[in-house]
Image (cartoon, rainbow, N blue to C red; front, side, top):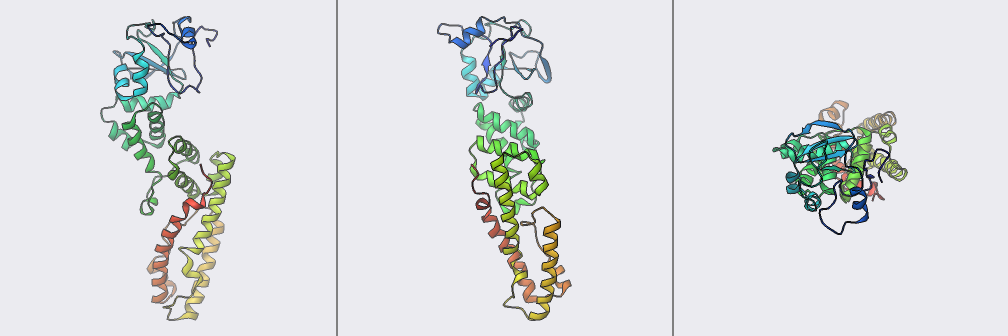
Length: 326
């Protein structure tokens, strides 16, 4: 519907960009007729200087920000843009302010900026490989929406670096702000990446209870996150630290080692209470540290093996810890 300025705007619920020029042939539907009957002079839009090409052939606008880019480049990358642009002649209904057609987009200006930068960058692969989370997430989401498989897949490779699917990469992944995990959940659901959902939750739980509570999760997601956090805290005792609570079959000094393990268990339990973050997939005590406290060689070997195998077993139980994610 036109607003009081006579300008056409479209709701975010639109799944595709809506051109503000009519089709050049018959059979125009009601919504396009409404556009045709509306004054074509656009209101003031703020230019995005890094995406304002003087010889650009189309202006895309979102949230009051305008991007003057190349329509053929859009069509070459995206079947959605190609279909949209195919219905109009390049010289038809040129916006008098911009000397080219103007299309209003239902996306956020920042997300659209990220996508257009990737489309217009000759080194888009390298750009996405080093993109910050917000940019990688925006490109993955909009590239999927507008059917740009090459950019979608490359952006998802970068997206996955924050949520690696293997234990050996987990402790070297980059961290995010708590609210970024909500965005990550939304994108994983949009792209039907169900295997990534538990990893996103795990990464958030690794940040601790304060991060979980401040992330802005939906009620059901918050319930699942808190349940998963408690479950994984329990796995810390039953998996990598299991050696502390049992007598090793190879122990050469049951009494002395038992006393030292009791002290270690109290230290660990106090740490669990004071530190609300998960330590499940971090390496436990070093061999040198256990030698220093006086454990025998048999107990130290048991600790090293149990720590490694226990963390792997716990890793395999992560999806079940966040059961209910969809």
